[in-house]
Length: 70
Image (tube, rainbow, N blue to C red; front, side, top):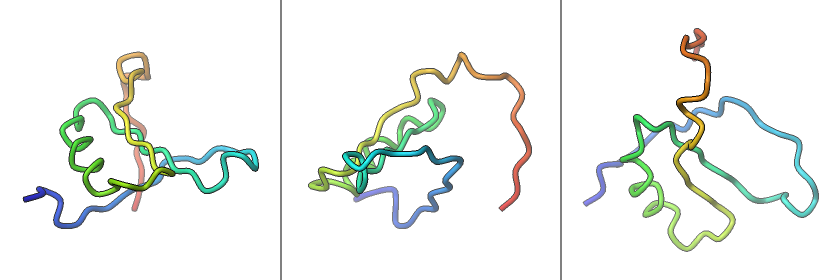
């Protein structure tokens, strides 16, 4: 049984894409939440246009988190 009965996906930023990349989605998970990668891969299984991976640069980023609102 999946631990994700439902989840909220917050989009922090988007990038300009080319026509070749249109229709593709990448989900990058912060390292403290890397346990979610397996669950997300199950959710998007069979969808070739979705990529899920752990943020490999997590430690290289700023140490202070910026405030955000919902």
